[in-house]
Image 1: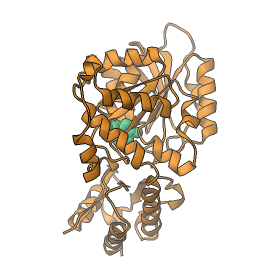
Image 2: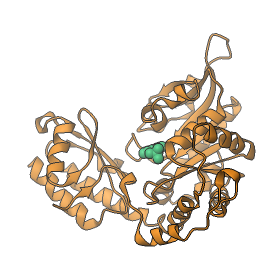
Image 3: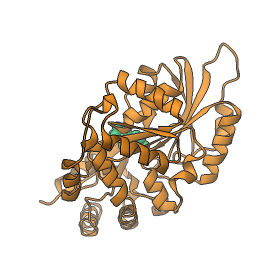
Image 4: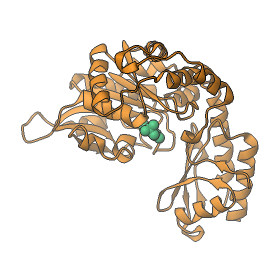
Length: 343
Ligand SMILES: Cc1ncc(COP(=O)(O)O)c(C=O)c1O
């Protein structure tokens, strides 16, 4: 049985060409600062993201956790949407690693406004946690691959600046946002204090993320990367894959978005599925399953038995993600399986 793996864009495997580039990468000891390929990646990404400096880290979670640790002190509070990855899926690192609390906002599919932030900022009183950091996630994974309107980013950041709050952009899928909106990464990043971005999701590299920000921030982040065990030695092999991914796999994200729209439009018509295709802006599709099709876990299991792999995210909610290892033909065959199960 052929498998259509729509569980996540993290399942992508390095292509033969990427593997060749990776095998031939020049390497050194990056903890000592002498890996030329890591240095090249960090310099390239600092410019790409419009920040003075950048740091290569093993994962998107470590990028977020190191950024949170570098931007806060124990007892501080982070303001973020309830869907935020660093709140839900990073083992409460904001509390365990940084000793912070999180004040959660109920945004629109992960996107919040300056008014939401203003209402969440604590007064300067010693009873309260100190509001210190705002996290924007673009695209927002839990909200269904939502892109942030640039105006919201600018306005939230302007408000944060007035209150001396650091803004971190979790741009794990920033390139999906850019391809969907036609904006440049720097259109978003010029407003924020730090940004992270992943190479190992839709861009197809096997490992790695980048953090970018001011030189002082990145130096602090380097220390916390070391503390968390994220200092890697001959990491140039991975940095070469990341450079290849940024060079070759950004524009093609449009294909993943078109595949997601095609799947969403077809699945939305099926009885028992609740999905608004207009909300599918990038490569993530989230839909609700009516109880008569069982729970999300039941439905996901039945899809799996027919070779379509997706993930349940809540008792009645399912997520499907398109990526560079899924072709249009595979999307059409997945639609056939959905139809068989729902009608
Ligand atoms: C928005 C967002 N941030 C961070 C991460 C964490 O990345 P990693 O799985 O590399 O730790 C993810 C993973 O899916 C994500 O969706």
